[in-house]
Image (cartoon, rainbow, N blue to C red; front, side, top):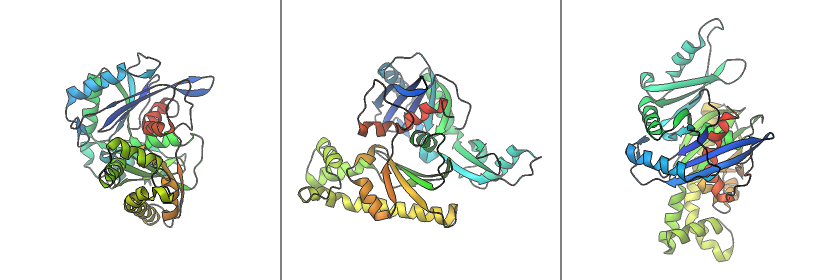
Length: 346
């Protein structure tokens, strides 16, 4: 959530299938990746946004910390992301007189927007600009936050901040002083789920979910072409939506799923124009995450949505330094990098 940050921490991206770690260092004004690591999470460790098997989760975190690539560190401070489907983030309007209590106004107004009973959530907020007429609120059920804090503490870690995932992604993909005046849609194409948010004037103005999973494309190619999972993943990345006649079979198989994704993007654009900013336009779409490596995906979605589509760059605020990750792999570390950046760009 939005909170004061403690120095010398690292980012920890937590999902149902993988834990990823990223730590940054600063040298001569330049940020670079100092260490990274990941560990697969067996099914059942996380259920409904919580650690269902706390002892196994603690063991996985400890193993991850012992097997990082890069410089070792004794720091136990961590910035971790909360499960996106269980969190809620929104910009609200404030109308309170300036001599009144802003906290009371935020709490009163937040009750009109959040999808949970306020007494069962942790609420954090901050003004979006100097005018103090708007505030961004972030909420998460207390049972989720308490569960995460308990497990991380049991693993010897000190949660310096627990943050909504979309905020971490935005920090990784945009420069801190970059003024984004035109609404930009960011789509995080994950292995098992996809998140979507709209970013404008350095704030997240809408946060949605999308029925798309990168792994479903792999499974579809596996069953349709009688391939192994490894072969199907390779075909997805190297052939994908290519128009090459010799490879068009893969595109034909994947096309209906991508068409459905494009339809959901169009619906998200409509939602923004109708419910967030009247007649507002999305100027650009940024793809990130594991699924963004599907060949020709950006070009295909640009054609179907009539919007500029680009692949995001999680290294826009740093360099790899002496470490090495492939372009495809670095997309999987976007949230962990954004979390690690928080101590430099809160």
